[in-house]
Image 1 (cartoon, rainbow, N blue to C red):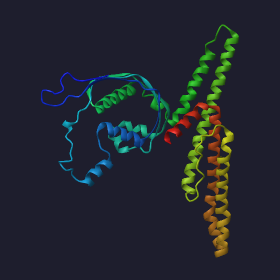
Image 2: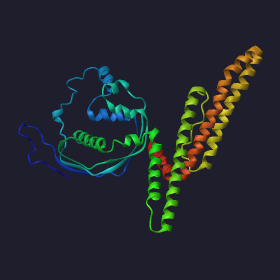
Image 3: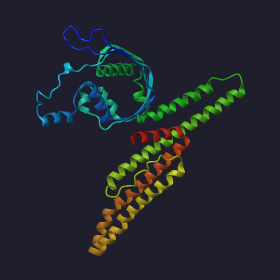
Image 4: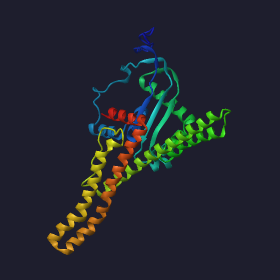
Length: 335
């Protein structure tokens, strides 16, 4: 709701902005963040220019006084009340590097850059601000109150959803549910037996899904590392844009990755020594074989790791269609 002020001109001769009352209600949000995006958001709301902006200002030189805009001429909107209703935020965060110098200086937020965060659900509390001018002030106050609330009530989630601890945290919930069903008996024996069977099945399915998901991530990490180190000139085929729905959808890419690894091994172990033999004789073939054997061993492992990772991803998506839908939505958002 916006209304005109009672006085359009203040006592010191400045124009008065419209007075507004706003209520914001957000649907549940899904966010994929990396370290660069988080740094940009922090600098944007704090008003600190990034290095590109500083270099740009230096290169452009001083602005002409005639081109400068007087801040007093800009009329920012005035909010009597700005309310935001509670909502949920599901976050995946991918760090790039941790600044050890900043950490030594006391910036403990750098600990977040130690490992990625997966599927962390944050509850954003209701916020009500009063007497603020400009959207920058509104969002700055909003972010400050949300950060304060998250640090005081939900800081443990940054530990439990971190990649090394996420598996133990998820399995711990299943173990707790199973233990509660077994320890607390019911008067009805058939109902108790049914709950035990249901709890055991739920725990077993969580163990299987988490084991498959973790194995898929580890094997993909291994494939990427081996590809970067040993197959830079002939990398493995890139993954299809369509998320696999089941194990059958992974056959094409998995077979291509495996064949690429075997073909690279054959090229390094057989083809290159044979060419060296034709040019330099037995000594050249021996040198070519010595250079090609390490790459010939690594290439099939890289191809097999990528094939296994993609196959496990298809199995995971077949067991958990909700995870597949989230990945499909993330790819659509990136497009």
